[in-house]
Image: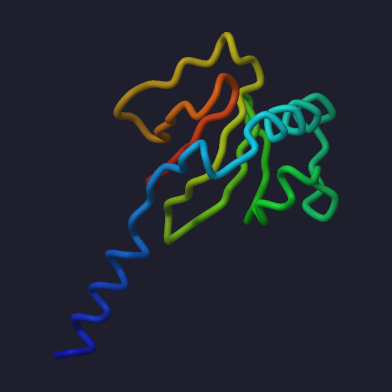
Length: 114
């Protein structure tokens, strides 16, 4: 019975995804370095700019709407930072997947629940 409760607790803790706070990052440097990656379209996990590489991301990938820096994942969910290709055109939607929270003018925290 004791192990059953531990397993349930583990599933609840691991399955919880939350947004990041702006105080945890050098958002200005991340935004500048991400813009360079977006412009070149080349991403090499072994040769990331320091502001992104020091985050030790699980993945960094480009999508039509911008650059995703995956910092955490569990089962089918993931979370991290998102930098839109064009800041002025990006309007996050509320209550949809993925969910975006604005951390700075050009950097968002994202959660994909899957």
